[in-house]
Length: 397
Ligand code: PMT
Image (cartoon, rainbow, N blue to C red; front, side, top):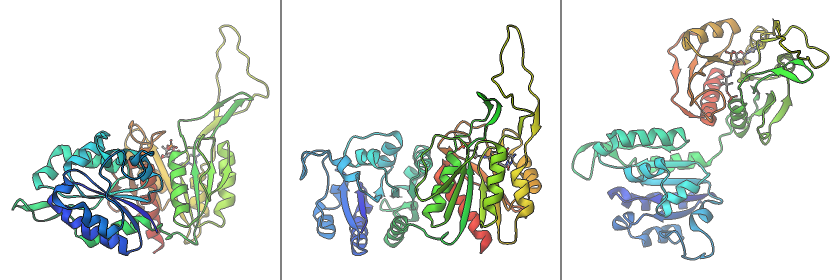
């Protein structure tokens, strides 16, 4: 049984909240309703209380467990926060981080998946402010269902109608069920930077934090894959259920990839290995002398992805990234061919909200058949990971 917090906001579609609460409860879930002041103008709390067997939460403090702060206690073990109907007002408050009633503070405190089913007048939905708020929330990982098109309560026809109850319920149920669609697959993910030593105390590296690769490994393991994460030096916690192979240099990464790929179904190269290493490593710390300068010559490191592209057998997949600061698609296409990849993830790393270090990314998926590039909007790295795994999975079907 999952715990669902069910936020109902004030619009005429609030009357459909009763059916949603009823279906989710019948499906065996524990539904905790929160109604805003305006929602209670459209629907009596008693209706939701009778259907869910839980009292409707309306006030931030007090009620039955007076010693606990309600928006915190509600979110502690929640598996899903569903908001249906979601008005333009609640979306605006959530996007701006405003917490001025129980539902908006609950949204701020929630660390579970959030699904919103908007319902409002067409012009309110199309208003640039609402559209910008939806984009912001999507980038934070919110999922949206609808609104649908149809006759609205105000008499006009257009987009803004609450999606059908059965669609909202099945979207909620789908979010509660962990997907196991990668069970039986062995997936390798590379993550993080490499370090190329100059002397015993200095090295050359880059800005990779490992977040993209770790998100891929977390997504793969959550969907049932045996997951091996070959990781350069990063400061991220080890994802549960994942075997981590720590590496330091590009040569270490090469050795680990060649060894593990032998028995793998898929390798995703999200790491940022150094293309060059110092031609030699000084055995002792390089000393500086007053007015001296240092010239280091570099030699090329092995191209791991290209080697894997040459060794892959039918059924094995190679997914690579192209981190670019200019001519994104053109450069990514050239790398796709050079490495023999099955998918290339073009990543514009000149953006401040995508690429290195940040929690979000905006990538374009390229395929060797020259089909139209799949441009993904800015979203959390975990969602980018889900899209990449979906795209790879399709290649096995
Ligand atoms: O780690 P984060 O902070 O979350 O940042 C994520 C990221 C920007 C590092 C990631 O999204 C990304 O773009 N990774 C690829 C970085 C990179 O090395 O790109 P590249 O265009 O230089 O290399 C192309 C591909 O070849 C990559 O898949 C790379 O892993 C691989 N490669 C590179 C060099 C090398 N010697 N051998 C390789 O196999």
